[in-house]
Image 1 (cartoon, one colour):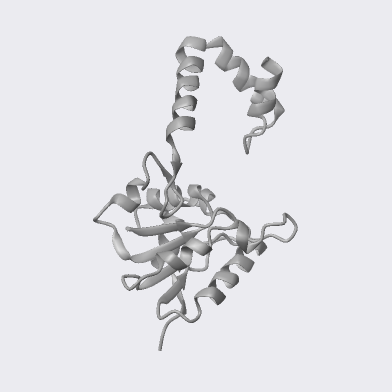
Image 2 (image 1 turned 135 degrees about the horizontal axis):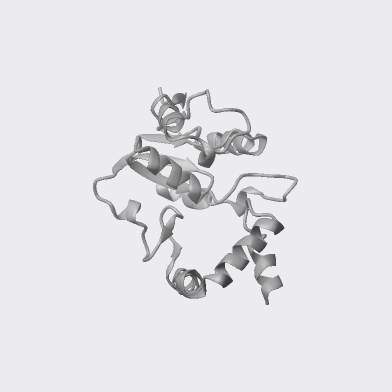
Amino acid sequence: MINQLVRLLSKIPGLGPKSAQRIAFHLLKNKELLLRPLAVSFKNVLNRIIPCSKCGYWAESNLCFICQDPNRNQSLLCIVEDMVDVLSIEKSGCYKGLYHILGGVLSAIDGVTPKDLNLDHLQDRINHHTEEIILALNSSIESKNTFYYILNILKDTNIKITGLAQGIPSGSHIENLDEETLSHAVNDRRVIHQSK
């Protein structure tokens, strides 16, 4: 059983076998303080947390707290790769619009095609309230391919399309950026497409 716990923990990004083993032993050593509450928390998350039907972020009901917030700017739609990107942008405090989570990026090597991403629902999200779409994707090759694929999908819309400002290191991920860098990237975004 312990080996299975270590094996499962080592599948968490950023944890190798040694770190997983240390965590497993620490949890077992602190059963009442950590392991039992963690088990209850995992069970609650497993049973209660679902993807938001609108943006794809985590929610306890049909809509997440962001999509339910009437104070969010309904005219801004920020497209990100993953849920952690939403969390990072929210922590920066620089953005008060809505999000659309793709759930990954196009990757021929990994067999990820447009059908594997949350792209069909994107067309449904764009309405007469949408004035600007921010493509806030990472700077990897796959992200750039996804960026241009989405740009091609949206080219005939009558909506301003912007991307994050340059200065984000090549190959970096939004989740790893400090709040100030991310805040500048969002606030200094560049126009990619604008209707005439």
